[in-house]
Image 1 (cartoon, rainbow over the protein chains, first blue to last red):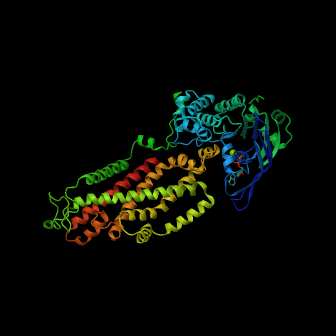
Image 2: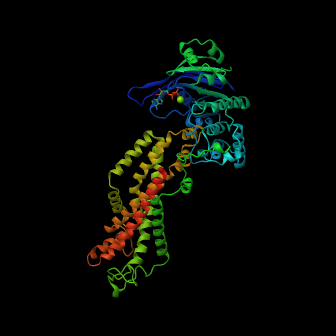
Image 3: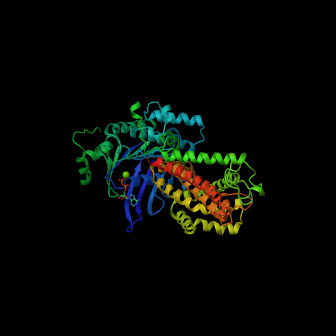
Length: 264
Length: 285
Ligand SMILES: Nc1ncnc2c1ncn2[C@@H]1O[C@H](COP(=O)(O)OP(=O)(O)O)[C@@H](O)[C@H]1O
Ligand SMILES: [Mg+2]
């Protein structure tokens, strides 16, 4: 197992009543696996992802359980250890391509930051890797894009840049949190295909989070359905689609527009 | 390919792009006025019409003439020469003050704003306590501790200015802390100090520049105030505040003295105000 999450509980204490947003969640990810989490918004998908990435807020919340990754408990290890894993072995791409890039830094600088922090590569080696990553995410003229600022790129291109920044260090796990939600339908399909390609190419495990069951169905081997912080159902993608056990999952499947043919 | 590179002015934040954009009239006025001031002071550092400390008994309180463009003071010293030197002193003190204020303000504000929690509580409560005093009063107390003289004034005013800068930086950092690009930097394991000073600080450059200019103005006025009260720059050094307090005695007999010195002070402050306003206006539109 690449990652094993056991009994994860996340509870917010910043309001008058404590609010539990993730209840007793168990999750295991194998090497090179593509696994999906679906659920309506507010169901705790992002919180789960942030917990794995070690990005939960430091204040006003309580977390319990464990997240084992390479014999380290990500939930309880010290920050120094966490920083050595973050960004190198586990990377993440966020939902909003418009705010995920630092507006005052060049694209190349941002893609390279991870290498600057985690490796001793020289400037030219970093440049090579960054340009290769930009080419891997199918951006045309990567050398030119390397020298551009975020505001010069469209949303779809920015999201590709974010993916490039996330794969430049050859991570073992890539978390993609609703990365297609802010994009046009045609670009969504391209990005999803790109993830599949990266998964095959580098054998990177991908945790694909979405509220769109049809997208998840297109690329994931296994699906987890979440609702109100609980895991409702879990299983191989085709089994979930064809023989869903839970009423909630059936409703989600029924909500997929009919004209869309699901390719498993 | 071309049509994909769309221009989005809302999100561009860098100083470089700001300079490329068309400038507002206020900004242009500010730039012109500040350039005049800087030129005036620079020339004064190299050469003044007369020695600013040379007394000439024959021209005590002389009026405006071709020989003395702003007249002479009660010791017969050329006022124009003294205004040139005095402006330089005032600007030097203001600059030192703002540099101290902003350097410590950035460090304190960044730590409080980025880390939040206990660090924020402790630093900001201390900050609030310091802010509760008017900064000129705080400076007065500090000067009574350090003694007078230009470097002590810089230190005292600088310390008194730290809290307001810290506040501005803190709120800027709190705004950015939740941004996805900062979370991204945290995610890839960038050290917190590198996040604060390499990832976040450049994004606050605009706000910092305009608050720096406002702070600069306040420092000019604070120095003038302290010297006016006689606890700032000591004679025979010239500073605008010192000269104003000297001119006070001749307000009715020789109003030109006070007018020349006061006018220069107003010109300096107005120039930097326009510059600061112009920059923040440019940032909005
Ligand atoms: N800072 C916060 N304070 C309190 N509750 C929060 C905070 N952030 C998120 N939540 C709550 O956590 C729950 C799960 O949110 P999230 O994981 O973002 O959902 P999803 O990504 O599935 O849309 C929501 O009900 C939300 O209200
Ligand atoms: Mg979410």
